[in-house]
Length: 132
Image 1: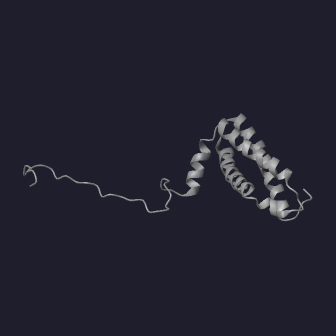
Image 2: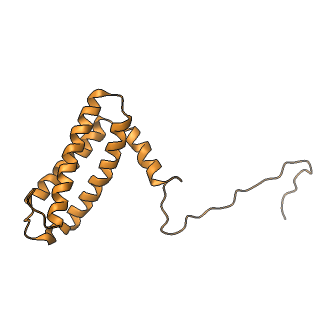
Image 3: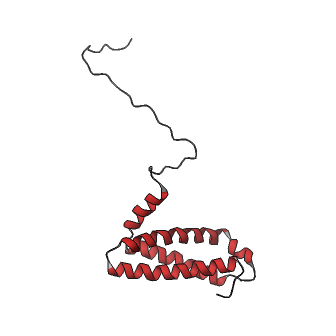
C-alpha cells in the first residue's frame, strides 16, 4: 500500500502536464511586431554586418539575373533571401529610429538605402519594369 503521511502535512501538488500541440511555434508569447521591436533594440555592429552580408548577397544574385526571364526571380533561394531582407529592413528601420549611437545610425541609414535599392531592383525585374 501507500506510505502514510502525517495529517498536518501540506498537500503535494503536481503541476498539470502541458503538451505542445503539433506544429505550434515554440516562441514566447507576444506578437511578431513585439519580437521584431525587441530584436531591433538590440541590433549591434555584428547585426548590421549580418544584414549587410544578406543585402550584398541579394544584390549579387539580382544583378546576375536575366531581366527577360522573370521565372529566375522566383527561384526559391532568391525568394527566401528577399523575405529575409524585407524582415531585416523592418528591424533596421526600428533600430534607426531608436538608436542613440551616431556611428550605428549612419551605418543603419546607409544600409537601409542599399537594401531599399536592391529590393526595388528585384521588384522591378519581377514586374517586368527593368529600366532601373
